[in-house]
Length: 82
Image (cartoon, rainbow, N blue to C red; front, side):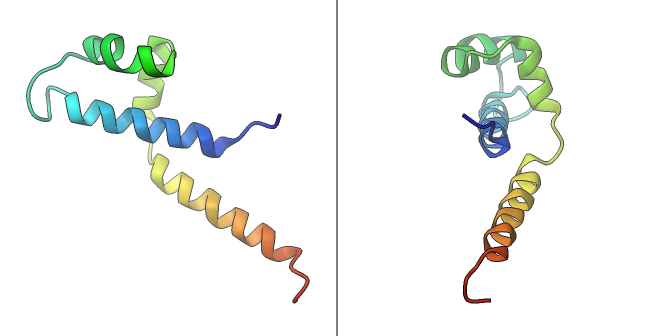
């Protein structure tokens, strides 16, 4: 089974959205460790270090859009109508 960067980027976006919803900087009150232990780990089973790496990932939405654009171009390369 091939590795899909798209799935990784979608997971990063999900985790960043969960963090934003529950962060102390947004709507008051959970620590990073609490968010990781109670919300992220039970669902995604990633380490705390990976969690912090995902939070630091710059612009995953833009990267995902770029990846999808590349895939569309790749599919058009072999289009029989061209």
